[in-house]
Image (tube, rainbow, N blue to C red; front, side, top):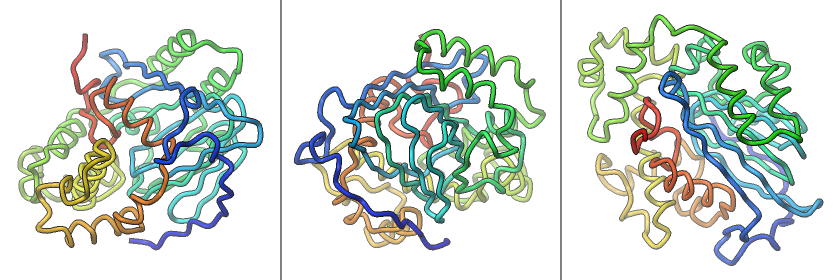
Length: 319
């Protein structure tokens, strides 16, 4: 995989808002999750509203883990973001990202944000561009042609006077009108449901269980998921291990690595390929935003990270 190019200075301005474990103080972050309705459930990971309450000169900095495409809208101080491949965006109200296999570094100041995670079916239906041409993308959504259709939504969600429930209702109305079901819907869902099985190891089994040839699987994965079947399965293993570790701070890596790794050195090599650092280096970093976010997402949503979501709405079921 390509080398990482993170390169901005960190100046510890968030120290007063964190404890000795790198966790944010109460009241700094407020997140609220919203379940998509049944007709849109297979298209989205979550809708969420995040408020960051910091002093004017303070910021929080963290790494987004590999994830599906996202649309993020800011009312307040806009973020600073940099992909693992060096692409930077700063000061934009609408931040769009493509599917990623590497972390994205970000810095948040006092702001209010809406986040919308697009599952592969959501990408196919609402963006309808080759996902493989958008991997590791971090861009100004107002200016990138692939995201032009979302500008009316940016006008709604970047309004600082908007309320949660009203804006969520507007989000749902917007997407219901935006595009009809995609022609590849059934095949995309078949691939996705098969892919998230933690016991799946072989591409031959992947294709067979998804009901298609290996060649068709490769083509559809690149088109709608952004990566080859092999990369997708490797990313799943890393993310299962990383999510387990982040949710069990008292455990070490050897207790949380995925069962499909031959040994710890196998896991370390895979982790470095995707995260650009060793597991130990990652563990030593503070994760003020992500730790709090993942814990709340797991509690409310039943899944700590996007890549582990079942493509049919909440993993805990509806109700």
